Image (cartoon, rainbow, N blue to C red; front, side, top):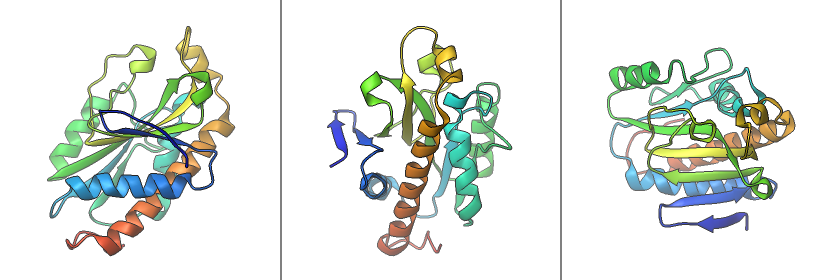
Length: 199
């Protein structure tokens, strides 16, 4: 079992090195969405980060991957390698989402820092994400759910840590998260009684 911790705030952690993690994460994501979503919701994957620092590129890489195979009128992706969503345009992007998409249900995705023994873990939680907290940036909270991947350890010189994060860690997390989202969306298609998903 790849889940190692579950707290009162409904955050679940998964070890991305475990073979079953994409399925377990996908089913947990499905359970969270099923509990909250109603008719005619637009699901937004808001993938936050920058491609200018390896450790901060998890969100844009996931957005890039998702944009290649998700094509559905009720599912929208913001934040890719070509058009990243980062500190300078996050507020504007959030405003655009709520302006363009009625009943937006936002799943925020970002990289995070943590304990060294937790590098490679994925967190799935209910409620908003606080982007930039690990590098002392004051950015608006966003999201109904969040997914974060722990790409490096927290400590001094966090900006330097993001610059020196191994790309292999980021790509492995991105692959696992994208596969989990694929499992989740396939399950939504077959399990939800509401006519939202016809992937």
